[in-house]
Image (cartoon, rainbow, N blue to C red):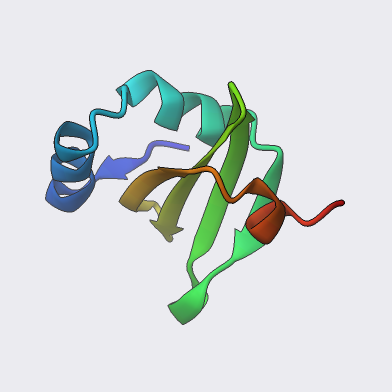
Length: 77
């Protein structure tokens, strides 16, 4: 899919020091795609023990963040 990179996600990448490549990895090979609020989808990928979460709405990338809370979002033991 040809994703539209919103100004917001571009800003989040800079502020959170997240490489654009992590977003691309999560989108192209997600471990899970969860349903979010307002019919949004959240592409999730575990990379180096952290969870990359990319929130999308239709063909637009809304935001991205890294979290240590893998179990919270992905389930498991």
